[in-house]
Amino acid sequence: MPNGTPVLDFIRYNQYLTGTKIGCREGDCGACTVIVGELNNGELRYRTATSCLMPLGNAHGKHIVTIEGLNMAELNPIQQAMSDESATQCGFCTPGFVVSMAAFCLSKKEPTSENAIAAIDGNICRCTGYKSIERAAARVADLLVQRQDEDPAKFAVKKAMLPSYFFNMKERLQTLSLNLNGELTNENAAAQRVGGGTDLYVQKHDEIKEASIRFLFDQPGLKGIQQAGNQCLIGPSATVTDLIESPVIQEYFPDFKAYTKLISSTPIRNMATIGGNFINASPIGDFTIFFLALDATLTFSDGTTSRELPLRDLYKSYKTLDKQPEENLEQIRFDLPDSNTRFNYEKVSKRTHLDIASVNSAIRITAENDVLINVKLSAGGVAATPKQLTKTAEFLTGKLLTEELILDAIVIAQTEIAPISDARGTEAYKRLLLSQLIKAHFIKLFPAMKVERLIPATAK
Image (cartoon, rainbow, N blue to C red; front, side, top):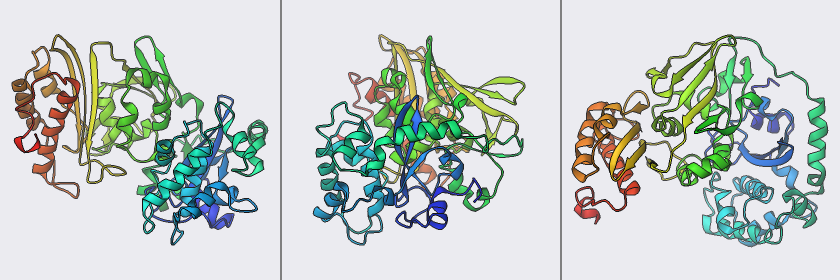
């Protein structure tokens, strides 16, 4: 099969493993969830993925686990918990839930019911009701409380939670890595670049399946998150989950994990790359808005010459970039916040989770004694491109923070945007949302500030 084939189609139509279901083909429902095991810095790491959006090329050299790979002589404890709690009716979604819970067992996350439930945030049930599924997830978490620092896969095998072949999978992948060849190498300059595929396969499912593809997801030079002095350097193939787990991001953005709960689901966060979010050029790209407020700089290369470009200058018009076809994004960098710098991200969508933003916004403020020394403000869903609101930020810079200042800044922000009415809201609604999100930034970042005029009387 072509290496652009979705893993879901390979599983079902080539391997005839039909327990993995075809649902939305957009990464929302979780019926096609699989577990992806790979070596990461010498350690075996398992994460979930929606196989409908995962190209076969991104499975190269990895352990792909379907529901059939979790079956044992009798129901495994995860399946048993689902049965005992009456957590299944029609059963269509059940394999995805079981696979996601098994991935939780294979992770090093603390075995709490909260974490177990978070592990199934990418799975939708249409008929059962979630409380019984949540009870099953809590029972699975209870099975892990004695694990402590033991290797998750070996503990799960020892406790008869998962099949015995997981016990030596690390060694099998190490052997496999020695025999991998360069069959995915593609020097075709016109080849379609593919990172995680989470948006590309929604937009171009049929077209990209047969395309010539240059796979970027597993290129070592495009991965990694590191600190260099006062800067953070990120490879464009770093995923959202990579950022969540990064010690650098955890130190400088302690609320980052909370922000990401508003963005997609665990399997999508495991797959979606930061560079792909930028190059996709969506006017409401969540991490584009996030990094615009950080005033990030991008490094592009055509293989011979490199150039740097501020992220704010990448977008020329709707879906049009200041980027040549032969150029690849090679690095993202930004200045890390100091002790006087505060950051916040806000998002409003029709659904709280698993939804595209109506309007999103981020702000970075350096302040001393309530004087705003430096401000960067961004917004999505309010123009044809992701916007850095430069006039508003310039107006705020150098001034003493007051309610009046914020209200005046909102008036200026309205002059910088040009939202349109669409399925996610009317123009007037989006203008209102941006005003409210700007207020939310300051209310959160400056909790001691007087906010009587920022909060409507009906909300008090």
